[in-house]
Image (cartoon, rainbow, N blue to C red):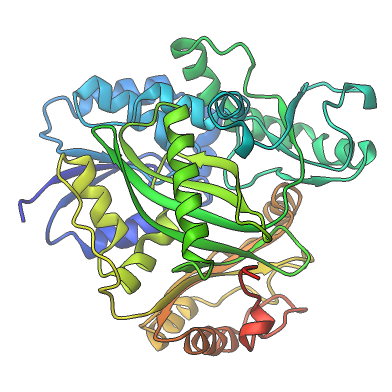
Length: 439
């Protein structure tokens, strides 16, 4: 293996964890900040993406970089594309990134190329005032034209509910504007898009099993890596776990991959790692596209390693350094893997703040798992509840030989955590955790 010199943009806990495991093989450099960690995220209020790219272009012009990596959803794809173009390094075409991430123009592209897989949709102006301005009848799903991590994306049943959802304090409005501004700046300079990134998008409600199709494009050729089931907490649209391999019928999975392939072609995606979210009708398996994420899914890195025997991070390194990723199938040590998401649905917050060293000791007691914890309280907690509809306070990635063993292992870790929100329930059986809607 040739040692590579790699720049990681806007690294999160998954990127840093994998880079630490691979530092004996490659040199990793990090630029950018983590939106979810204080005080790093305070840089949001002064961040200028064009100046950021210009500074990095000067710094790394003669640094011998072999590739640029990112799994960040908010700023990473546009920054990596701009910088890759400046430095002559492999990158996702900027036009494809902008088209995928601007949800309105993505919908227009899907409507042209695969209309049968595109939910009905319409724009809601930033300063909407009346019911008659709504492009669809209630209820519908609403999301920002440009956002990430399901921020402010949810079902609304009435005009009053939409107003409550989309009206913000001055601080919330300032944060939202700073989150969206970098994309808007790049869009104005590098596209002919006329609809700005501050609008809202209304979409018809689509039922069915939600999945994420993962893969990469290289030289215009698309390789599908696998379908992950995205399973919600009962009665909500909040992710409870991401499970691999999918439990849905193989023909449904193949159909989802073909729809994802067509969606990627619609936005001109010819290079890079991606994950495409879809909903599959529980009666027919027919797919509707939710969105394209033009990046690797860091939370999924080790799920493929556990089941298939290769790590998505290693595939990303190979792809972005000009090599063909070494892909395997069902050669891992586990038959099933999942990324379990611990959520506070009531907004009560943690029962207590984790003591110093407590999370490290928890990880040491469960070395087979990858455990991430996100303590929040006060205004940060309230903002996450409003913007996301729940508080994600932890993630546990696990693998096992059977689904029963997988859920039992998660339940053991869950019971070993002493700082859960007060009104939590210990998960138990497969049925209690929920399962993909395949029947």
